[in-house]
Length: 395
Image (cartoon, rainbow, N blue to C red; front, side, top):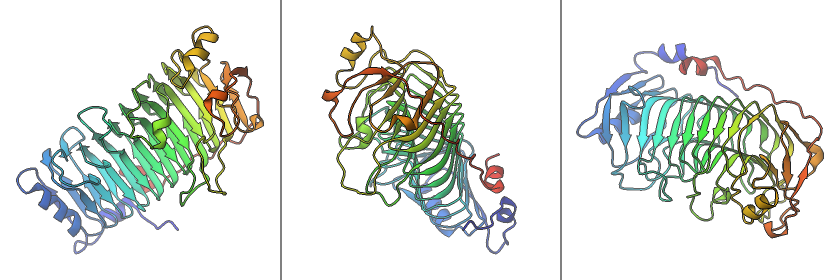
């Protein structure tokens, strides 16, 4: 059940409870900052001053209703280049937290992870691995998981070896006005329901925006997702994910990828320069033993998108041969051929290529052919409406 929470209530918390603590850069920054987070009371504001904080260990916050605020993502930098152990730069495990106006650089593990942290706001946050794309970079930049009601607004992530912005096993999600580049996956919505992803720029990743389900996780059955009015451009970064990760299978040149999910609407996006495909619809193609898992996509609607050049260098095995056979490039929308076409609909006025693959069959058995996907219209998922206090905290 959602608790009543307002920003006014947060700021009005009694003086004996709430605090405003300022932490400046300088010697002992690690100890002073972590102490401020540990000793925070519900309603506290932790101001992090401008400057560079050279940190040697991850930070954590486990107090509800705390705001952690810096002077801006280019002014307040939490650098973990000297981090001695593994793990996140910042781990949040409490509710009603606002993270705003600072950067996390070069953490050994994920940049910022929030787990079981309901009603969390990420605003004007930058996470970056400054050495460029490397397999040894942390997996996720901004990483809320197992949570309800999440706002990610004005975030920038570069260099994640899995996903720049990853939301997993969660509900009621908004990802907007953010920029992701130089990651394997730019934005990833996994095993989650009720998500709006809009107004973002995904460029220079291996794959721009991914929506999919995985087996054998505590929460499955992802769907009810709207991906709209984003710019998904030139996502042709070579895949640098560690072997064995699911995103290691994403071909370079992927714009929007929908895999094993239900009722996903891809609408009014600008899609261009993605060398494999602007939109890819596919089943989960690896082996699994979870009887509850549904590996094929259902009720996938693609409509009203603006397509630029795509499909000129398909990044899957044999892709060059398929492109050559089709005159030098493949259509901008690619379907692997698995699942029921009566539940898939593409109304973008561009051709669609089916790979003709049976569920679980290897790519070598593909039988590429043009296809029209004119399945039944699925209802557009309802707009995700966040609590007014969360929207106020993001202004």
